[in-house]
Image 1 (spheres, helix red, strand yellow):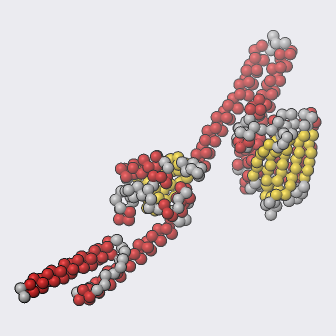
Image 2 (cartoon, helix red, strand yellow):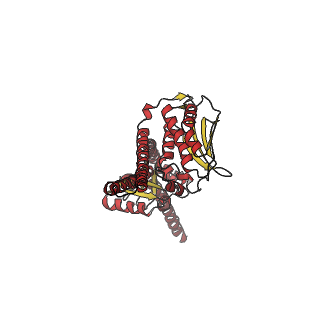
Length: 414
C-alpha cells in the first residue's frame, strides 16, 4: 500500500490547483465588474458557498449596477444638454476616435450612430481639421475657419473652436470642439467684396466719361463744330442717365433691405401694378415695336405691397425691353399655383445662355448682351429682393422656340 500516500498527495495537489484556478476566476470576475462596469456571468459553485463569497459577489453586482446607472444617467444628461444646440459639438479621444457627437454634428458631417467610436479622419474629410486637433492637444486650445469637403453633401465652411476636455470622462489627450457653420457668412462676404468692386467700377465709368466730355466742351467749345458739340452733349446726357439709373437701383435695394416692417399688403395690388406699368411703358413699347399682352387670371388672390409690386413689374418689363434682343412680344400672365400666385413675364427674344440662368438675379451680374447694352445688373436683383420681401421666390428659364420667362411666386392673401 506504499502507493496510497502518493495518491492522496496527488489528489490534494489537484484540489489545490483547482481551488487556485477557481479563485483566480473569481478575482478576474471581480476586477472586470469593478473596473469595466460589466458583471458578466456570475460565478457559481460549492466553493463560493463554502468560502461565504455570495454576499461579496452580491455587493459587487449592486455597486456595478449603480455605477452603470450613474453613467447612463450622466450620458442622458449630456445628450439632453447638447441636443438643442444649433452648433455642432464633437469629442475626439487620444486615438482620434469620435467619442461624442450631438445631432447638429451628425447633420453637419452626415454621421450615423454606427460611426460613433470610429476613426475621425475619414469622417471629417479635412486635413485642416485633423491638424487643428493636433494643435489643440499641443496648445490646450485653438480655433480656425476651415473648409469641409462633405461629398456627396455640399462643401461647407465652419468656424471651429477646440479645447482639451476632462481626461476622466474620455481619457488623456481627448479634445472637444464646437463648430459653427459659416458658409452663408462666407458667401455674403464674397458677395460684399464683389458688390464693392462692381459699384466702384460702374460708378467710375460714367463719371470718367462725364468728366472727359465736360472738360473737352469747357476747353474747346469755341473751336468745336456744332455736330461735335451736339455729340458730346449727347454723350454727357447718356452718361448722366446711366449714373442716375445706377444710383436709383442702389437706393431701391437699400430701401428694400430696410422696408420689411413697412410692408402694406393689399389684395389685387399685383394686378393693378401690371395694368399701370403696361400703360406707363406703352409708348416705349410702341417705339421698340414690342406688343404687350395681359393675361391676368388670379384676380384678387395675391397679397402685395402696392409700391413694391409696381417696382417689381416695372423692372421685369424694362429688363425685357432692354435685353431681350429681337423681341416683338411680351406676355404678362398670372395664374394660381399651390400656395400662391405666379406672375410670369415672357418674351420672344433671344433668351439667355444656360450658364447665365442661375446667376441672373445676383447683384451686378450681367450677361454678355447686358454688358453691351450698358445694363447695371441691378434690375433683376431688385425683382428677387421684392419677391423675397413678400415671402416669395423668383426663377428664370428659357422657352421654346425662343425667349425668356421670369416667374415670380407670391403667397396668397391671408
